[in-house]
Length: 347
Image (cartoon, rainbow, N blue to C red):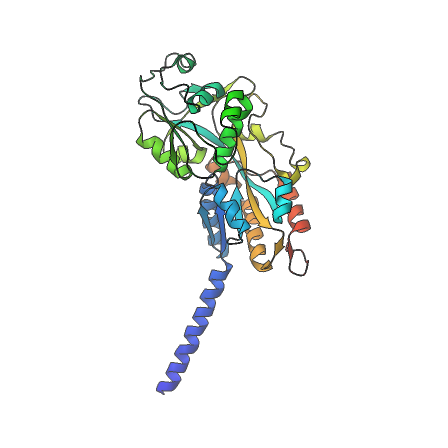
């Protein structure tokens, strides 16, 4: 009797372990950009409720996501700086856009409300070059008549890690300011002339909140979530615009996804009177040849579900969902380029 009970217990335990192992194996693991972390988290929660499959996303910055997918330690990587076609080919990767949003300047100034302060790309570049050091500087005061600017030192806050958010920020400033382009340049990591670093959008937001007189740059959802004052920015058409999903959509309206190798569209400094000038897409990276076709298929199911069901959630957080025509291009890429070990299409 005792032996039978032990055998039954062992069988039940083994079955339970097998079920748990299967469930854990089905979970998806991704890593990379902090820019899309709020929407990926929201999608993951809803997807698990709908399907039972979890998605564990490590918000470590675009540089870390690229490194991890190259090392094959995650099922997908994420980067806000799209890789060039030759780099994708070299590493055996495909790339597709998952979501769009905007990077915004944020400030910690007593009495200044969200959207009240106006800044140009020239002022922003000179602040980040260390050339404008006081909030009462003429280059800022002339843009903001009637705003009670404090006679305070400007503390510049930037990313300390490899970051697609930094790429979008520096790409915009490099496109619009020749001195910034030659002195700092654009990239996921640059040598900053001044300022203090923060890890991730989270770290930059925390530093700006902590330091009076600080300015930083974060994805818009972080500004909203942390109730940090954002600024207006003058766009390519000479208009000061507010960041929101409509101004992000305006920037993305003319994007030529189908004509850009690797779908590597960069949306900074786009024309259009309503365009937010620091808009960008966040990209997913996967290996073309998949050793675990089932896991790859689970990743694609997650993003397919998110494209179809995640639009309202994206709008809620002021992201912009990918248009149906772009989703079709993405799915065509999945069918054509993602293969299992025998060369069979994963999707």
